[in-house]
Length: 364
Ligand code: SAH
Ligand code: SF4
Image (cartoon, rainbow, N blue to C red; front, side, top):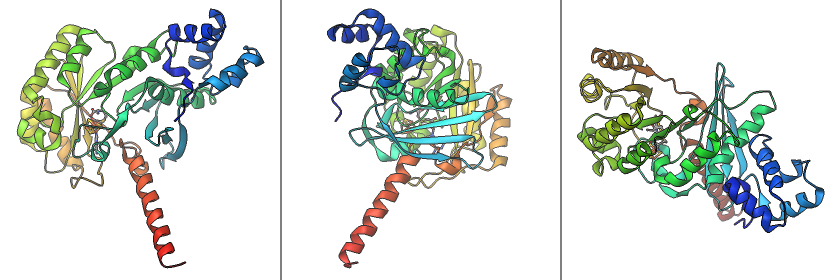
């Protein structure tokens, strides 16, 4: 394990204190903070307005990038790029960059694995390893910000839809959000960062009480408890009625629209009956529904709905006055669904290990 302090784990006040302990004045903290969040420095040696002596001192005490990229993949259309990072303790983090017209949207992870066990999700299938630290969340964004800056571009949107359940790692995720939106730090508009949750009811209430400006998306995927229990185990703890009550509370507190995510699984939750149940459930609510044909995963037998079924579902929703958008699955050829790249890389490593074992056994 790396025992050095990662600079992205520090608040500005922490950084001032950290430097004071090294005998450095406050304005050094301002310089370093600027290098981190606006200069996108990847190494203290890039901080050219610091003395060489201070840079050397810092190099022995701190890190900036908390992980190393191990695999990078580009989709065939070149618009989506996925990076798998390895953390010092052997965990993995996935981040995806999606280019769409003028948007540069990052899909970032908040945990290594996930404890929620949704059956259709590659991350849920691998189980939970640990929460990501603030630095490990923030650095995913800065890594791509640096890369985009090289071609005169910048991150325009962030979705917390990579590995993990953001509201299960509430403190670190929201501290990272605060850092990414702070005008003196990364300075991205709060409305440009979407938090997606499986529906952790107490956390949604807390989020509402904190009057957060970052949009909230709820992964609903089924409109009856009988159906949702089969897909999302946490529904047994917080069933749909409790979830809807928390959502109504959120809307009342913030006056903000909620987004529902619905992965359409052929023959399972794409029936007209489920569309009607969903219509009844959310009719009149300040909301929008995103319909996403399922991204198939190794551990789940279900497949995506056909385009006809997607359209029929959408039309049925419209009868209830519920607006929806069909989202295309971007980067499907590069395992861009959450958890899928780590899954593939480890599977290939395992296959390679088996191959070596076989060679050793057969004396090759
Ligand atoms: N844990 C959070 C955020 C990460 S998952 C959540 O569940 O909301 C991001 C989104 O991807 C969620 O809406 C999730 O339901 C969806 N998702 C997971 N696996 C999927 C798959 N195989 N196909 C389509 N969407 C999937
Ligand atoms: Fe976790 Fe979200 Fe995947 Fe469910 S869908 S297992 S909450 S990452």
